[in-house]
Length: 148
Image (tube, rainbow, N blue to C red; front, side, top):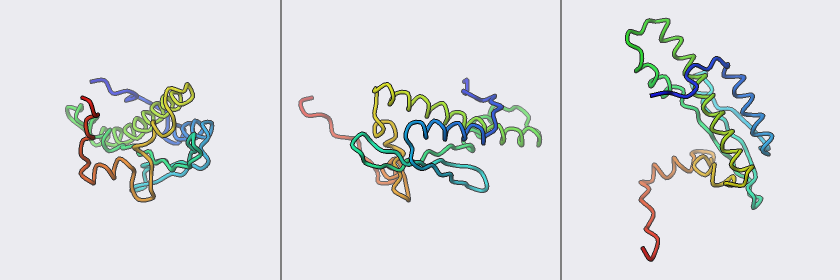
């Protein structure tokens, strides 16, 4: 398996700065950061839909999951390897997020999707994302369209 950006050398703060620039250029009116155990874990931003509704979007970057994936590839990890992998996982997680956001904003710009289509799973109500809400509520499959 080839993990995109697994060799990125771009520091997290520079990648996040680039993400903030992309979001600002796309019309984000506010951007904030969330930290977990001293590490950046999510970016939140406010953006207007075509119908003029202001949405708060929360985009998490799960560096621990990236680390876990990378660690499985190491045959005999040393203490320095583990430390390097942790740093690399952060860089990779945020670089992946930058790439994903750039693609989503391109889809919006090219009128292939709108803000709500792209960011719906990440709409934040102040406590959880829409995805977390659906996942926690035992979301059932949508009914089949009538006439099928």
